[in-house]
Image 1 (spheres, rainbow, N blue to C red):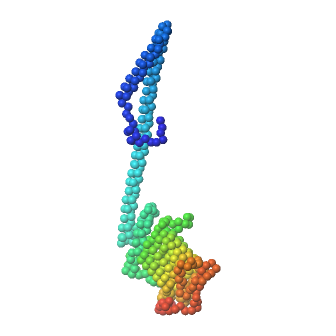
Image 2: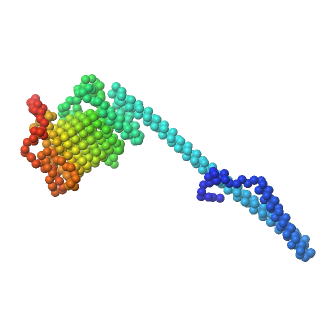
Image 3: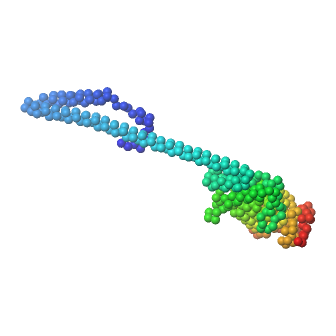
Length: 427
C-alpha cells in the first residue's frame, strides 16, 4: 500500500496491536457460522423428498464447508493485508529516521569543518599580525603577504585584513623614524635620508602594504571588477609614499589628515560613498584624472604643495574645497560637478614654489583652470560657491565658470608668499 503522507512515529505507535483474544474470537465466530450454516441447510434438506435426502445432505455439507473456508480465507487475507501495511509503514519510518540521521551527521560534519577552518584562519591571522610587530623587516613583509593570501581565500575576513593593513600604515612614520625630503625630482622615488638601516627597510614594508591594496582593488580588464570588492579604507592620519589607487574601486575611503609624500595617483579611481581628504597634505602632484566620486568628496582645508589635476572627473554629489590651499595649478577641465560645490576661502600659496617649478616654465603663479567644465543648472536649493575671481554663468549645456578678474592681480589676502623659496639659483 502507498500513501503520499509520511507516517510519524506517533502515528505508528497509535496503531492497535492484534491480540490472541481477537484471534480466538474470530475462530469461534467462524465455527459458529459454520455450525449454523450446516444446521440450516440440513433442516432445509430434510423437509424435501426422502429419495434424495442423502445426496442433498452431502451437498449441504459441502456448501457449509465452503462457506467456512471462505470466511477463514477472508480473515487470513485481512491479517495479511494488515501485516503488509504495518511492514511498509515501518520501512518508511526507518527510511525517514535514516535520512534524518544522515542530515544531522552532515550538519555536524559541516559545523566541525567550519570550526576547524575558523580555528586555522584565526591561527594564521594571529601569526601574521604578530609578524607585523616584528623588528625584522623581512618578517613584517611575510606577515603582509600572509594576510593577503588569507584575504584571497576567505572573503568573509577580507575587510578585517584590510583594516589591519590600514592600521599598519597609520602607525607613526615621521621624523622620529626617518627624514623624507620635501623636494622631489620628476619621476624619481622619494629621497630617504637614513639614520640607520631600519628606516629604509620600513619604507619598503610600507610600499609593499600600499602595493597590496592597489593590486587587489584595481579593476580587472575582463569584468571591470577588483579582486577585493566592497572594501573600505581608513587611512586617516597615515603617511603615504607615492600612493596610488589607479583604476581602483573603493566602497568608502577616509584620508583625512593624511600626508601624501611623493606623487599621489588616483587615475580612474572610483569611490562609492563620500570620500574624505579633510586637512590632507599633498607634498607633490595630486593626480585625480577621470576619477569618479559617486558620493561626493571633501577637500576642506586640504593643502596642495604642487599641482592638483582633476580633469575629466565626475563628482555626483557635493565637492567641498572650502579653506583649501593650492600651491600651483588646480586643473578641473572637462570635470562634471553634478552636485553642490564650495571653493570658498581657497588660498593660493607660493610657499612651495621652488627651483623645479621655475625650471619647468618660469613664473606661473597658482591659478584655477575650468575649461569645458560641466555644471548642471541649479534647482534653487543648491549651494555652489565658485573660487575667488570666478562666477557662474549660463552656457549652452548648463552653467559654466568664468574668471571675472582676469589680468588683475590676486589680492594679497588670497596669496601667501615665501620669496626665499622662489629665488632661482643658477647651478
